[in-house]
View (tube, rainbow, N blue to C red):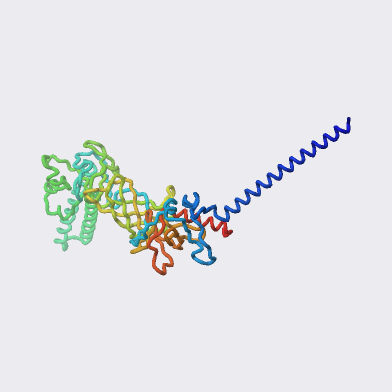
Length: 452
């Protein structure tokens, strides 16, 4: 009995081995078949023809390979089965334009007052506000009175001027008398009288200058020929016009009044005073700005700082405005802002009554950094990098396209200037949308041929 059982076990092992061998053979045949299909597809670019018609893949727009001749331009011509295949691939042919080309930097900007014509005004002496004549938003002319301050310091300085004037006249008369009788007086008396007159003149000049420093316009000559009452009346209303004193008894007006005047034509943009308020010397009360010219300050990225220069054309549009203002760069900062890392440039824009610029308004500006009179221009989507050069694709038949090397230049929005070896003239048409499909086909062919 043991012998038959041993023979049965050996037979089972042989049957299992035969089954394993058959399974391995089937797997090898399957792998070989898949490899053959892959090789065939690679060799034919997965393009199959039955009865002279393209298969489904070709009908979907896949370019058919062109015969390649090493070293010839035709080696990179990309052909499609039909114009319908070109259309299905999304390729569009657009005309090449010849037009002026401008290279511009798009930057952010803000409107500011012309800092050369903004005045922050304050009184030069302490006192109280006696009268306010101008208010926020009022237009003023140079010399207009903004307000009048009453200050005891002003009255004191006016009195010192009158006293110095009297002392000067007294010393002058004394010297004149001594000179008439100089034969009967000692020379020392004449010298002392001359020295006293000179001293009195110095005091008078100092008193005059003190009032001039406060903004009063006066001279000693105006007062020399007047009597005391006329002098007192004149200096009491010094700097005040009849219009300002209309309705006020001039005999009851104090001599402590001093006007604050506008230094130039402009608009009141700030006022911090009311009648009766106590003001200190040097404290800002009024702010006046000349808005006939406004500044536009633009922020240029530091990467583009080398492109800007004085005199370049600037176009600025304030937020919320439809009007575009045109000017030129008049100033370029010598440093990059430490916080924003941008370079400030400035343009001056004259006021437009119909569309005035408002200070502190933000907006967008364009700086013209280069301009060409006439340039060959194509859409930006037409220019592609094929791995070694910039190219555009030009039609080379009814359903074929050829890459043409170019050098991109100025850009303006969606347009770019191109140049190159256009021996027969620039192309009349190039591929716009869909040019990336052709670029991808070139790169794929190079990868398959081992060039990449």
